[in-house]
Length: 185
Ligand code: GDP
Ligand code: MG
Image 1 (cartoon, rainbow, N blue to C red):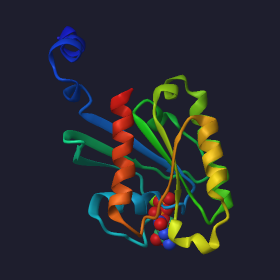
Image 2 (image 1 turned 120 degrees about the horizontal axis):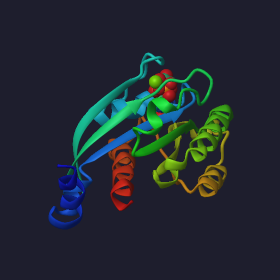
Image 3 (image 1 turned 135 degrees about the horizontal axis):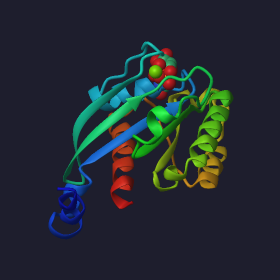
């Protein structure tokens, strides 16, 4: 039976059947907009108030590049940066590390998460997206785009800026890009 799983993927089953599941974990400072991004992705709506302590896993059947994938998304809450990382490190197939472009401290917290993730051997092969959220608050920006890009480059992450309260497709695109990267591994 074990034989089935490995062999089938390599030899007989089309590649998309092997990568038809993806576990995505969102990390970042409280208030950076993790829950708002997840709710937007799942419902196309922006929810402005959301219990920050809520940790949950949501599941959505998605089509990414005409291929189905069961996308599970874990919303996390850490009071003081990375703690109890074991609850998601082995589960994750990709990470989205979120900060708010109008909050320098949230960017520092991202740095801590990236440092912590890079200590785990397994995560070398796990795609990470560094995501600057709240792009609609450009006028209050504290973290320049190039600062974000530099950090992403240093840790080998993808990098985007986004707003959870603007275009749904832009938000969807980021979650789907994470799936693509997992498939490429
Ligand atoms: P979390 O603690 O990382 O889950 O952050 P939340 O999703 O709870 O968002 C924290 C606060 O920021 C809430 O008041 C949200 O309404 C707000 N928020 C989240 N994303 C955005 C965004 O893209 N733009 C703006 N203006 N506010 C946002
Ligand atoms: Mg939250």
